[in-house]
Length: 372
Image (cartoon, rainbow, N blue to C red; front, side, top):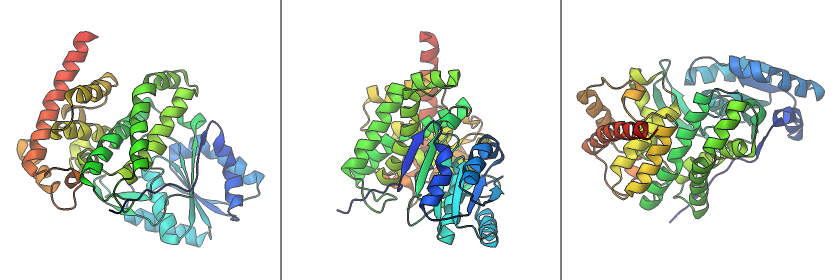
């Protein structure tokens, strides 16, 4: 059996590490980066990045990314990179900005440094770009030949991002271990090109255990606006461990919903990790091998931290059964991540699991309210 695991070439995390960006560019023997960032990322990193570039006498160009990660936007950025004769891509921001940065670098054969300024998903470490249309609906994804050259995570910046974004990242990361377990049982071929290895399963489990152990203390650090060891561990789990875990460990029902619930206009205000959270609840209802004490531990963690465990929380409370069944039909076809389970998942199975997840989520919320 072929097994495989992939990694970014280098991962650097810590308070203040973004100031090293000039040294990193020079270490590659390159001299003119294209900075791809959104308005918020630009506002919080502009002074640090430009100072680091000036110190090393490095010229630069920039592209302010707004809107969606579309293939048309990628082509526009590529044209600007060529026109300005840039020789390295620096992506700074959230998941969609980083994904489009990876696409630009891959299309042009350039090195890339990825600098997440929030921790809302595990997108930074992967060799993947998830594509959307102009309306925010997922249209597919591409896997590039290699992972980013450098992941640079400045926790002094991410600590100040909104708590909701961090919680979305935690929700995304919570699914990693359970999807990897499902893929491992079925020997599914993952985005790495092979079945999961022992090492990726260990990393996925460490990710889950770190979330359970460190989330409360890390959230206290966020409220205080200070970087602590617990916060550092949590960020490493959400970005590095979860990123390697999903790419080489595999995906299943949780990310089928996490990616494709975007086809419902009702969910467009929900973040990716929030949709993955409900996808995980659905997967837990679908998998007959999951012990209920473990199901309840995961459910109660998500309820305690106000992650969405019901359709209503995703503003889908009024979605008809007919629309849900159409969705389930579309997402249990060949090629769907639902096929990565060790048991067959038909449209009716997925529909039943989504409905059961909604009811069970409501029950756990009610139980939590009684206790608190």
